[in-house]
Length: 195
Image (cartoon, rainbow, N blue to C red):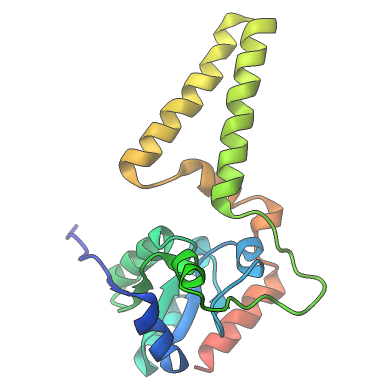
């Protein structure tokens, strides 16, 4: 296996200046995307990128593709995965967080059935904190061996920081509220085919 080079990253000003000519793919969960996304972005969660390969390849053949997420980490991973498939894409340095911090608008769906929710980072922080607290309480009240739950979460967080991956986010991303509705994903893929 060869090393995939790091994807090219646009800063927010460069992305904003070229936004009208870019196909923007938001790799966050539907709930995160509903809380605010770049104008014109299509929501294709990172774990659905493989399913969308033909459509992304088609869009990349017609113009530049910008992949975004909250901080840039997931979109960088998506760009690497796409590069392994021979598809050249670009990531947004700092993600939607940097975009908003620069004062650029994030679009939110106008429909009342949006599923805006917690960001994945917030979900991970809540789940990790709840598991640590649960491990401590159960370790004190039920059996000391249950303190290992807290230790396992701490180890997982340290591993996550060292590898810049997050197993807990991968698991949480599979929960129903973080999954795209089939119709939403199909609509995004159809829109991507038309670009």
